[in-house]
Length: 498
Image (cartoon, rainbow, N blue to C red; front, top):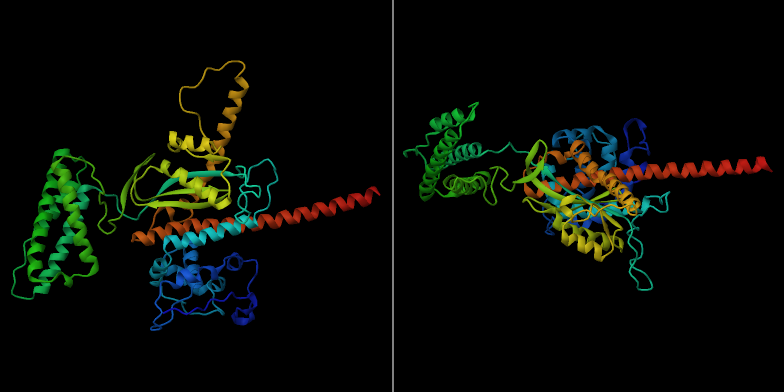
């Protein structure tokens, strides 16, 4: 059950002990006034039934504010609830009317909050925040600097002619690693064997006394695994032998589970154990095929028993050739980031460029003047598309470079300067990845489900855009003050001359 209880609070209504007052200059007070909480009420209410039975759920402001606070502070669920309990500014941001000394909700509620805000809902929140940022941004000092129009501008032209290209579009892709141990085939088989032994113990216990427990050889299997895992110089022959042994133990355990399932219903297993049974069955199939065919890869390869949705992402970066997590493509428009795609399987991000450009046109009513991307985006299809719509794609042209003559020296020099400036402009999207991975949780996604992990990724970019919003308001205030001082100065100079 859910009751609509969202009200935008005034600053004077929040009661503090000892007749204290909140400072209006605090960032949480400013953010609470900027975020349009009521716009997300309808999508949040869809998570609840209309039966009218049960306790009323926490408000959309409480749920969304708690997720924003956790991402901004970088704390665990329990520590974040403690911070909210101790800080009156955080309680005001969550929508409370007065300071309370007890926890507003249990730390386990964070799991439900992340499920109630799937990635598409957080993306809608991010789009609303992006529109607010565009409205708050001052006009550029340099009139020749191409800026995208506001999202509220009239789309198109009154004469029917297509609008001129404006603004810069920066695109790139990265991987958000999941919180899993570095996977190896031997380690994965050992974990699967241990999980299967837990299932055998549970099914044997459900049969009651008087039955003989199936053999698992767990001690022998453990010794053989440690013998290979702790070897400083593990030969390929010994590794293959140990993998064959672990496959045999796992295959035997699954046969024993099949026989036990004929006597005991599998409903005695909890949800986690039943999920593990399905996952380790697929792991056995994949590892057996790879062992028999002496292969090192297979489609939809499972690398984690607890998070079977995680896939290896080949990145080719220095220090981490392969990462394990979700791959995402983003577009950066005037400092505001948008997540265009999240996938747990590897893909070619160059195929997303046309869709990202069309999203830009749908949002601003015109195509960008230039697109800044790395080499993988500069394929022939994307080049033809950009040429058709008069969009300058950064980077050198395809083919052999032409011979440089004295007449072309100035043109070649200008092209090199433009290419260097394009790379400088593209540093902004790389910096956005660095900000998300160093300051926020994009470097290690701690959630375990695929849906909640996508929500955590979207929240990282949402909080970064909110910080951009605060910075925009601050610089707008400084700009107004400088203009006021400049006007006073000109007035005083005019009086002095007269």
